[in-house]
Amino acid sequence: MVRILCNLPLECFDEREALEGVELVTYGPADRMNVDGVQFPFDLVFDPSNGSWDELVDLLPDGFRPDLLLIYWPDQEPLPAGLEHCPIPIVGVFSDYNLALPYLAGLWPFFDVVLCDRAGQDLFRRLSFADVRYWCQYAHKRPFHHLMPEVGARDIDIGFAGNLNPAVQRERTSWIERLQAMRRDLVEVETVSGRHGLDYGRFLNRCKIGFNRSIRGEMNLRGFEVPACGAVLMMERDNLEVREFFEPDEECVLYGDDDFEPLVLELLVDDARRERIARAGHRRVQEHRLGKRIGQLANLARNPGPGRPRSSEADRVLGRAVAMILTWAPGEAVAAAALAANHLAPDDPRTLNLLALATLRWRGADGGEAAWKLFCRALQVSPSYVPAATNLCALAHATNDPGLATSVQCEVDRRIASPSWFDLDGPTLPFGYAARAIDRSLALQSAVRDGDPQLFAATLVD
Image 1 (cartoon, rainbow, N blue to C red):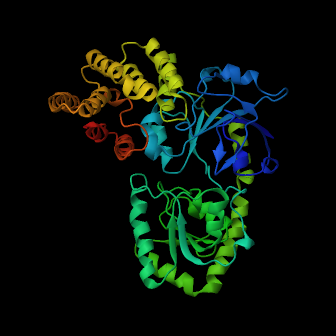
Image 2 (cartoon, rainbow, N blue to C red; image 1 turned 135 degrees about the vertical axis):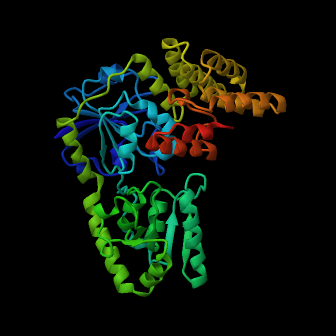
Image 3 (tube, rainbow, N blue to C red; image 1 turned 180 degrees about the vertical axis):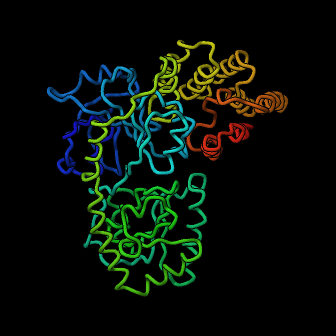
């Protein structure tokens, strides 16, 4: 039995009594975790954006001493302060690094082990994380994804429900167009977004085939949700992980650029084959429920690896504050974290840049003047630091003063000529998942993999 303290109510995936070999305690704000329209409560009411590890320990139930701290998605969920005091292995689950890598890169001091998909292993090792391992974090959510005979006949030949934002799902967009084009072959196609919970489960129960295409070659949520709802899973052939979970042509169907449409048509005219694959996939997915997989983490408690890298307090406070920008943390908490980082290193351009961004995150346009001064200060203390210049340029463009924008742009151009990794270390506007922000995250990924900072620097030109 492994005792896990976790920031995610795992009941959203599987019943607690089904978590084999695990004793679980969860923590988080009382109203935080609404998953697919259902509020999943935490065992401990605790706000990590304002609280510390020591305060969290004081809330633990009598007799519960965790073997490991499991932190899901630190680009979405803030870390408690003072994690250096945590005496047990800290395990991080990283997901959407393609969207948020500039915010995740500075979290290397915090984790004994990082769990991610196959494609992310080498990336995070290159970013100085001590121990990076593959673990499939996804499964179907059993409260919502199951057979629903009451839905009736499967009247959708092939369906997709998910993110259709072309800025985020760039490759998938062209595949959705191919899917929709099959209507000319009299195929009943439905592609939707914004379906969640039981409504999403009912949609999949209407589908004969569930289309899927991952974003990082990972076995994603849909890869489990489709077979759980009794449809045939259709997934890209070059996926790095799917064969570890389903047998092609027996429990799923894999497609490529050259045979996608023919495979769909073949499945639709061969009811017996399609229904056989759907039944086999549904049987197999029961073996991959989170309750059966979570026990694998017991090995992390017994074999945590080399431990957290050596780091300074300044490293830790800065990394926590940068990651917090993208999370649900209130603006005041983000600003307090940024102030703490700047207090430890007042002449570090990274903390000045961060404090300016935190000011904008907290106060919006009312913080523009203060942020401008902080960005300027960052440029004064470092003649080569780039992110503050990029952010200053973004503010200058917002003033509609062409002369000012041109002047600041020249400074950006000068600084990106031959930057070091340090010169590029820091988040930039815009916040969130705007197309430009995603471009920069993807470019940073390429730059780290190739060891060439210029690949990232080029995207910081506004």
